[in-house]
Image 1 (cartoon, rainbow, N blue to C red):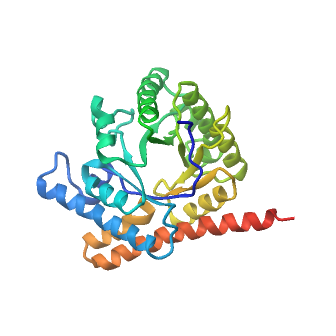
Image 2 (cartoon, helix red, strand yellow; image 1 turned 180 degrees about the vertical axis):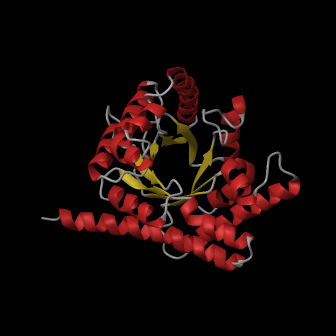
Image 3 (cartoon, rainbow, N blue to C red; image 1 turned 90 degrees about the vertical axis):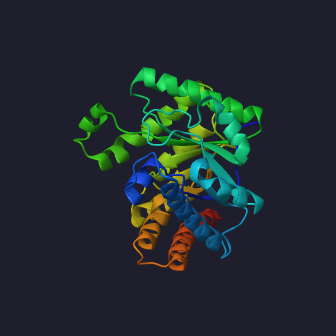
Length: 311
C-alpha cells in the first residue's frame, strides 16, 4: 500500500491518559475499577460532544476520533460502526521514549479495535541523543511495517521538544524556540525518520505560524514519490487564539488536510462537568461547539485561499 491519505480529516483526539488521569482526576495509577469507570465515562462524554458536532454539519466523511484502547475500546467500536474515521494510540502514555503500550502484542491490539489509523506519538529531536533516536526509529519501523502488511493506515504525531542547548540559543524562550528553531528541526526529523523507513500516511504536526514553514513541511512529507501523504495540525493544548491561527495558516497550504485539536476542545467542558458547574448536556454541547469552531476556521481559510487563487 503506497503511503498517503488526501481526504479532509477533522479529528477530535482524546487519547490522553497519564496527563489526563493525574491532571483532570488527580488519580494515581494503578486505578481502582471505580476510577477506571470514571475516566472511561468522561471519554464517553467527549464522544457525545463529537457526535453532536457530526450531526450538526461537520462533514461526516471527514469527522473522526482518536482515543486509546484502555478507556475507549467501546467508543472505537461504536464510531467505526457509525462510519467515522477512527484512530487508536499505540504508545505508552507519559513516556519520553516511544515504546508500545502493549509490547510485542501491539499489532494484535490494533487489529482487535480495527481503526482507520494506528497512531504513534513520538518525542524526537533530530539533534538530540542519537542512541535514543535510533531505538525509537527501530520500534517505529516495526509499527510502520506492520501497518503496511495489514493494509492499515499509519498516523505519526511528531513532537520536537527543545534540547537544553537549543533553548539556551534562544535565551530560554520557548516561544522563540517554536518560531525560530522548531520548523527546521521538524523537517530534519521527518527526513531522518523517512530515511529509517518510517512511512506515515499522515503526519500530525505541531502548529506553525508561517505559511512558508507549512509549505516546507508538506514538501518534506511528500518528497521521493510520497505524493499523497497528508499533514494535519495538532492543538498542543494551546489557547483558542493560537489554535485558530495555526489552523488558518495550515488550511491555506495544499497538503494540510485538517487538524487534531483535543484538550482545547474538551478540557474545560469535562472539568465543568466534574465540578458540577455544567450538566452533561451542557458539557457535550460545549465540546461540540468547540469542535465545530475548528472546522469552520479551517474550511473558511481554505475557501478564502481558493477564492484568492482565482484569476
